Every structure is written in C-alpha cells, then in structure tokens.
Image (cartoon, rainbow, N blue to C red; front, side, top):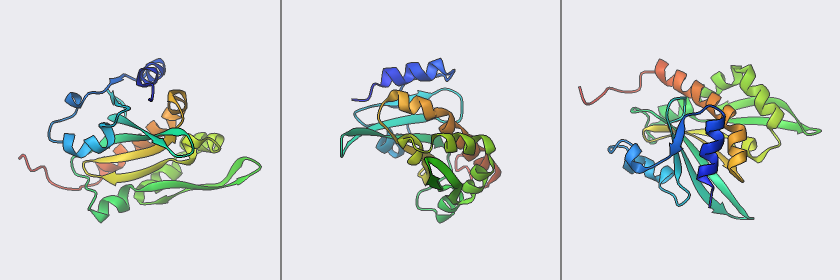
Length: 188
C-alpha cells in the first residue's frame, strides 16, 4: 500500500497544508463524481489551500507496483462530455531526449498547453527532471467538476519531489478557468 502518512509528512515539510482525506471532506454533491479518483484502497490527501484540492492514489501492478496519482483541481463548470472543456484543459508535454537531456520541450493539447509552454520556471523544472517516471507521465485532463493532473510514482518521496511541478500546472489551470466563462450557477 501507498504510505499516505509519509506523503502528508513530506508535503507538510514543504509548507503545504494537507491531511489524509476522508470523503466527509468532499462536498456531498461531488462525492459521486470524485470517488473514482479518491475512493481507492490507497486513500487520498485533502489539500487546504494551494492550487490542488485533492490527491488520489491508486496502486497499479503491471511490471511491479507503482501508483497512479490524480491531483484534482475542482471546478463547478467543467464536464467530461464537453468538448470545449477538453479543448481548453487537456495538455501533455512533448520532448526529445538527447544524451539524457530534453530538447524541443513543449506542450500539446488545449489552450492550457499555451500557458504551460510560456512558464519558464515550469519548463526548466520539467527539463531537469524529464528522465524521472513521475515527470515523463504528467498530463492534464478535463473531467466532471474537476481538472485532473495525472502522473505515476513509485513512492511518496517521488511524488513529493515533483509536487512543485504539479502545483505550477494546477496554478495555470486555475488561472485559465477564472478567465473563461463555462456555465451558469444553477443555485441562483
């Protein structure tokens, strides 16, 4: 099993406010949508502040155990069946490796990829870590009521070491979502 307590400790050491999650921490009207990402045996982390709302962990065994990580950026207006959401938010890095170094690093996908490509700090961090599994597998996807930044890790230390990169990606996601009008609040 993923050592969730170790991840929480490592993130706290980095200055992130977080705790082991419980579905009670998730809005009741979003639980059915988020449980796919959060209600796995390995648990999840609830973030308090910052750009990410939840980090879901799921063990996958193929050529040995590794963990799929789903970092959720909540948003009331994103829908998986909306092509506009995918055209806006889906993004993944592309690159070529030459002597273990990334060349031609860029982003493909929706509008978000343009924002990510313009962030020199983000792209420098990715270029320096591109040979790490946690960085090679980064991608962003729109889903129901959230945007998910996905990667794969071997252990809590691996996730904690790339958390800054994921948080920068989430920051750009939030900024973009604030600029775009997706829908109306039905509660009004």
